[in-house]
Image 1 (cartoon, one colour):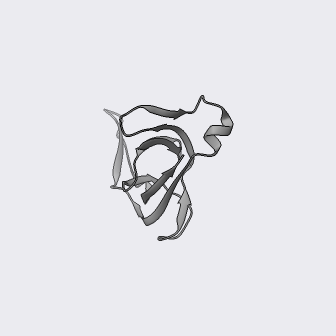
Image 2: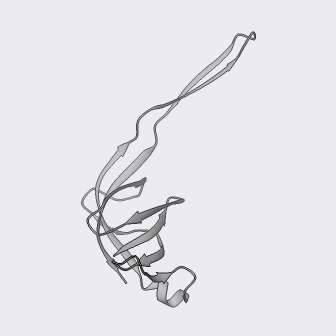
Length: 108
């Protein structure tokens, strides 16, 4: 069984036991959380069990439980702006914060 969840404005395909890096969540490592919005749930054969366009009462009962394993930052991305012949150069770095979670189970 696997599910499609939305958290931090991004969608992830998760299954029990998966280790997923999601945009930063509030919580301490080791704490239990329920991941954002569940969009769809699939059975083992790939057959769709529940979808987001199903009755809202069905989808509110679906939860994806996870455990926070770590907080960290991604690799540095350099942003370099340059205009030739104008002596214009700007460099900026960015590191995105993320939370690593281990999916415990999908309650459907």
